[in-house]
Amino acid sequence: MPEEFCVVCGRTDVSTEAGVCADCYAGRQALVKVPERPKVVLCPTCGARMLGAHWEGRGRSPTLLGAEDLYAFLNPDPEVAIRTVEWTEDSRHPLLREVEGTVHLRFRGTERTQRVAMTVKIEHRTCEDCSRRSGHYFTATIQLRGMEDRLREKSPQLRERLMRAWESALPEARPEWQRALSWFEERPEGYDFYLTDTLSARSLARLMKSRLSARLKESATLWGRKNGQDVYRVTLCLRVPPALPMPSAASGPSTGRSRRASRTAAL
Image (tube, rainbow, N blue to C red; front, top):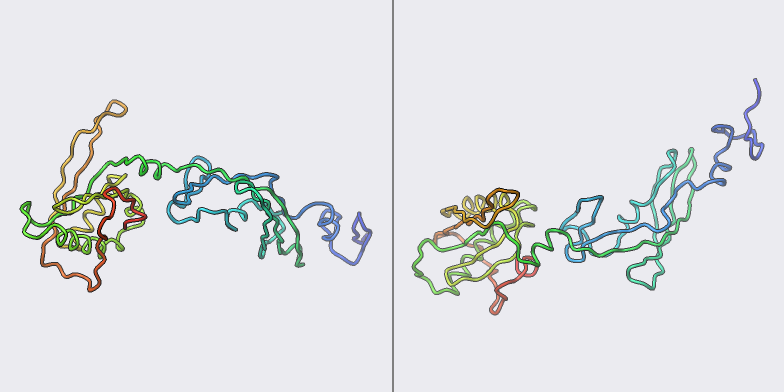
């Protein structure tokens, strides 16, 4: 039986794949490839990334380029297992990031390192949710009120009580319900919360009804037409009883808060 050897270096004391040993294979081509000038499209407001035609990570991603963005551009050889990557940067332009990475990897049973370099182009583009919020787009309103239309409490005390009740239950809401909150406005009789998704608004209102022992009433008004169908805006009115147990620490809105405050700043 003929002895196995590398057709490149001629060694016979190492294993080969397709006649080439691991050292020669690694020396002839990159074990990890990267695109020359990749692009990251991110929302400068919430940090969402555009992946294909969709936005991912709304409200959960940083607004700056990070290691997770860079890692997505690594294209390893099928036989390569990437262990860790150490990134360094030397950039003078905020939207063109010159980055280098030291990739620690395992290839055919041996540990190796490889350096990669690329220029990442950053494109800022406002995502759909942030665009809607900035334009005060909404599909539903949650009205937070006392039990009666006639005010039996002074407006500041009533609003403080209602906001404390709202904020005590809001952490229990699902993330997608909270992300649908766009902005809120103070009213003499309470608060109006504006949401960009009707299903999220209904779910959030039902949660508040349960947690705050409130009464819930829903109504709808015709807003317009889309694709030949009527489009309605939904109003959900929550009436919170005055004898609701409250947290010990007050967390109501501060005096002078803007009537049209964003959820990020206000909630």
